[in-house]
Length: 278
Length: 312
Image (tube, rainbow over all chains, first blue to last red; front, side):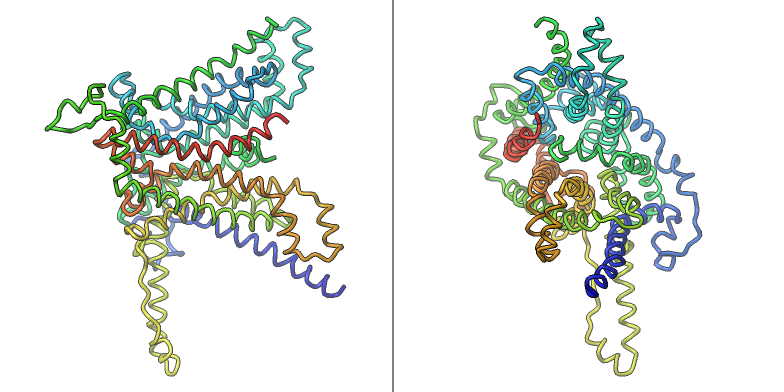
């Protein structure tokens, strides 16, 4: 008995200490990014100022001048918000139809929708450029980025909403039907209020995915509709001279999303595994 | 019957949108993969626009299959993806089991652990390759320099100095180089995706049957044998799902490869497609079709697993 209690006492200290150490190691690169953003460009590369330096906000105050940050950030906000909104506008009715009026094909349709998400984007790189640049002339427009972001996230949106809607008892919707509520009324007055939490977390997660999208947003834009991904990728190799300012603009690009992400860990599992892990 | 028609019609916009999104660009890729189509050719200007008269049959496929870069890209993709998978699954399992116990500050630990997953790929790559891995100015360079200085200093000591004289001077590794760029990508992507594995394994661990474990403890089973015989089988399905989802995502890695070395020594199929797209659209399209086939092989297994859990 003595050994058991001793080892568990030791374990009571060791396990948490180990967990904390690993967590801090994993968080360290992010910490380092934020930490570096408060150093001047000159200090950021000097070993003698590795941990002790005079913090400055100049990298943040000069962000507009150095990188035109706000233009890219505005584009990110606009494209991610509208793409999320449109995905919900198309996705909510679709998921409603599948959850409450399933047919024999509902499962196949859902699976097929998911399969579109698994196509490698690069395979259609040239056709997309060709279509949008030469034929439709919508290359480098907000409209295009919103459309593409909406389409690549639509399968996940419908899936997540479908899993949330399935939890709602059918009888509630049926009762509405008895009272003579039409389909639009069912969605607006019964479904949306009931599934508000699920819809909100779907929106949040979609917004995060849109914000972090790095393939299409970079390849289908040049200046006008370029998002933060494009900005950072365009400044990939500063040759060490601008670590401070680069760290600041990177921090500004990821901070809102990392913080949003903290609030939707649970939904992330459902959203990324398509409900296959519960 | 008819009162179901309208509700069902509500899914048509989504279906039509996704159908167009899937079919139009992909059929163009398929078409381009069978014709000669280059963007710049002073010798054969007729190849510069897509036309059926430039039909090449499987010529583009043959060209791609004979290209050294293609096989290198396939090999390298497999190497990168499997390395990332091993790192994330092993680390993910360990960390998930560790964090699954309750201890003070567990909520904060979870928040710290999950954070890397939300960093956008471009920032992830820029941060790692510059501020952490740079051989001179990054933490790696500074750390190696510090170690060398310390050894240098210790060499002057009596007795001990003789020992430290045997030590070599360490060279920092340049992760932008041809031989090492793949490792940089593996490192940064594994850092980003381990949290994903942790999160999924943790979700799954919470549904583990505790009574079975208690019985095993009473029977005197060690913690390790419980882990191997009870926890790992319980996690078999989430592991499979983590592996497949990550494979699909990592087969199309792009931003990290571009930022680390612009593909030098470290190409994958999407990167190769990008390079072909600068001129040889036929070859780019044929490579694209290969990429689609490769992704579909994995997607079929994943979809089958997802489908099983769909309707219950």
